Image 1 (tube, rainbow, N blue to C red):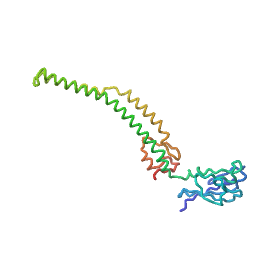
Image 2: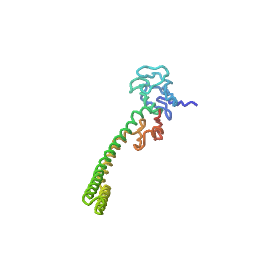
Image 3: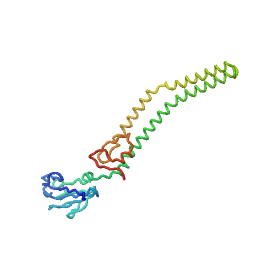
Image 4: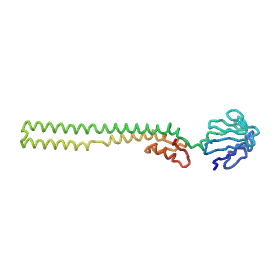
Length: 242
């Protein structure tokens, strides 16, 4: 089944499936040309219908028909926009193009990778800052306990009841110091990390978007999931898989 769409172009071509040229562009025909859009091949060609003054592609008057590239400059009637009409070829290609895998690789994936790298560094830095005072307290408790046990053995004798009591006290002190670790203040540092995480989100969220329509993606969603499903915007047909 053919998937070729025809678009008419002219001063009197009006309605759906037409590009209506302003009436004052007298050098453009009333039914100047038509575009043949092959959605399967994602290609466009132009064919003159009643073009007395011709069609110009990249500065040269073309034959009665020919293929177009998205970077082509096309004028109908003449190369003066006051008298002729400039066709926006790139915009038409954008409407039919679905393969944005190259743009996704170059523009979208690096945004996600850079965001996650900075976020992981921020979280790692926070964890190190929080673990340092805890480790110091726990190590201090262990050292105090060992010293207390050692001195009690020397003073009271290893097998005396006083030495046993001292060991019990040392173990208790160590346990209390270890328990105090849980009460070290963290709220201020956690709030600081939240603020920095939010700043990172604001920095990258506008860049993590569809390269075709600009729809924003969720930075909590890995790029591989988006690549597999394509653009979530129902009005956009961009696909990102090779």
